[in-house]
Image (cartoon, rainbow, N blue to C red; front, top):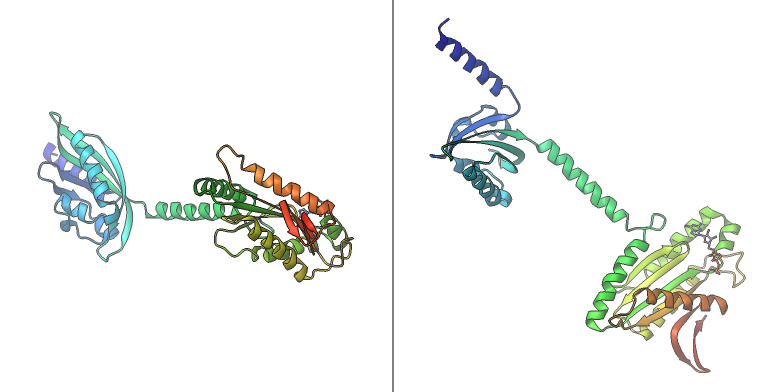
Length: 325
Ligand SMILES: Nc1nc2c(ncn2[C@@H]2O[C@H](COP(=O)(O)OP(=O)(O)OP(=O)(O)O)[C@@H](O)[C@H]2O)c(=O)[nH]1
């Protein structure tokens, strides 16, 4: 066999191999920017015929608009420098859809000047779909990690973050920040008497009721832990915070959940502590909670089904910081 025939036969073998893979081979003359070759598989992937790939501009025009300039500029820069590279982008199909592809580019140079590019285009749409699904699942997981599993209301983690941002905002604007810490009375006895499952149901109902008390979009309600809840009230002064604490107390009474083991009364009740301050530079944000928590325990000590505020309240009998039903 003549040596030329052997070479031609070998070329045929390589061509058949190249055109039977899932990777689509292509070649561009960098001086003229013309496509010298693109595998016939391109038609199956994108719907554009082989001979519609005339110049590099056809490639650029078929990149999704959102990543077109960035992808083209990235590839052109690396081609000029002679650096092999990869690029992922969405390629336009002949029927107007987009397919995620990866181009793997090898740059050929002569005398330090780029002359040709050869590469492979891969369909990575399945991998991208999986990545996107994973991202969606991660976002969902992240959102769930801020919610309390039992009651569905925000949890302590989200409270800590919200407090930090509202504290910073109140510092900037010089406005008041109020906090109500709420605790169910004799909840241990409720569990002991009614059972843990009924206790869980009770927590759900209490959370739902308390969540509806504060109505401003910036008001923030969370389950702090156990049978303790918090209501953070940005831009809310003492009087308004006190009114909201009273609404909390009343809304739980109105739920009228029987508490057969309570020494406070026949129905389930809550106690609350209220703190309100205008944050100053150097103040510690945890002070707001510890003050409200101290007030909560004062309300408990003084008989429960009441709230106590961290400031004196004027009553007809004089001054107190207590309010009870
Ligand atoms: N069912 C249920 N019970 C919980 C949950 N988290 C905390 N508890 C219970 O809440 C009870 C809280 O009890 P204590 O801290 O002694 O307070 P208390 O009985 O409410 O008494 P006072 O607060 O003084 O009125 C404990 O028995 C906890 O087991 C929960 O998710 N589900």
